[in-house]
Length: 94
Image (spheres, helix red, strand yellow):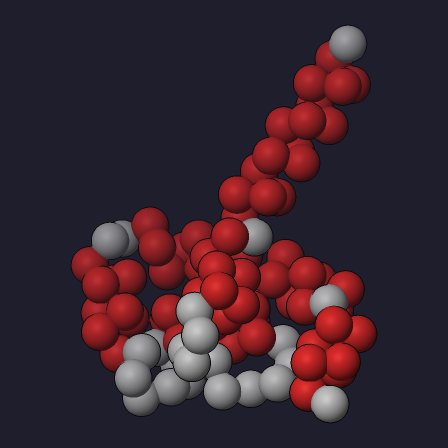
């Protein structure tokens, strides 16, 4: 029973961490200009590293102290999600 609870807890934390860049990169139309690794690009836009139009979002992220930390921690998870979705992105670029 403890193993199931741990597995569920870890899966829940991973799903919560995967939300930031995935939501910004994949759901927002026009926010990400890249064809591949949209979630990673969304996370980088949230940090203010890429994209000129994402500066207001980056400013709001830095006002909340925990947002940059969660975004940096979620970048590897977003990269893994993007790697799994590479065939979907390839078909969408055709």
